[in-house]
Length: 541
Ligand code: SPV
Ligand code: MG
Image (spheres, helix red, strand yellow):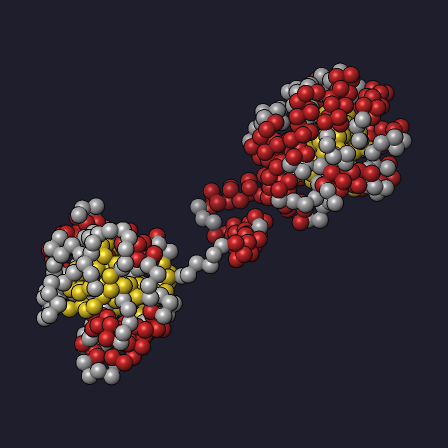
């Protein structure tokens, strides 16, 4: 059923129906979830939630924008409080068209002059509209609606403005004749006498709508007996939220803490539910390509002996470079590239590692064992799509980003700019199937050997340095796990390094792709490296 049809049903049903105010998307949702069959988009409440007065201070497009949010998140019909129609007949025509486009079911306009004031602020001093002019507005609205069910209610303000019942009836009759689908008779008395008397006189010529803001204590039975079609509870959502917000804000201010209010306010999860977060999760499952999660394994067990007393109480990955520990920098970069989880194999002074969010493993035998033993400690993380790297690396983010683009089972990053990156520690020279031609395209090179020697017998000069970064995906992780397994039988296993593993993979006939880079990284092995790393972290070469 369309929303205009649903509102017309409410208005024309033989029962007295009740609708409740809402003033934005979330309050509209709450009203619907409470079980109401319709929503009053109150001018007072929408103005109030904007923090402005109910005097047409919010523009009509701001009102329509808000009612669009309300309409988008609800399935029950919305009757907009359209004030005076925001202008003359022409403005009314445009309003009706814009409301229909937003699936707003109807509009109520009042016979006052623009700009209006809320009826309960010196109501008797407010000039009423000319009857003919107001009838023209109703006609114009009816003539411009494209859905026959769209509802236009005419609101009679005569009793508010100090006129008598005869004037109210005269106006109602004229508005009815002009095509209004119902009459809202407004009263500021604290008892329902006026609206009940009006309904009796009106005698069912068209549906009667009432707003018991002042005569709120009236039992619903009275409206039923009087034959009222629609009762509007016009402002209770905005008033309820103001009471709650004033109480909670005062308490937080006084206590300088939110601990005690936690149980008095909606859980964040409730807000997500009202926003429809579940629906989005379901849609993501349908429409988003499932992201292959890339994880990271970081080898961070060593002290970094050449750093002397700097590493007396922490491993080298916890040395601060440019104000952040090396490992923190690495984890931040992983976060940026959505690499998760991050498994770190620590050893030396492992308890000084206080970088949050890590999956920490400990190589308890770090003093007597080497890199492969550490990698073995993260064996269960060796699956799917993984980056394996040394924890003492500093690199520009694009290097990791480009590596994530690789589709090979195993890819290693090789710096072809031999000589441009200072060498400290023991460099791992890479011999590849072809040199870096520094083109963006073409066949990728293949890794043939990693060696500590600058010149490998029979191979000539190396093509670069492996920087300590590997990506494994598809079968790659399994190949690595298998190679690790078979190397474990080697009596030297505890001294073996990642280059030994790479060479083993090559010997096993596994293809290892080379991703060439040209500088933009360094590793931290010596005191001089620390200075260089500081410059690098601050954007230096
Ligand atoms: C509104 O809700 O904005 C109304 C109803 O116009 S009342 O404030 O009771 O006049
Ligand atoms: Mg109003």
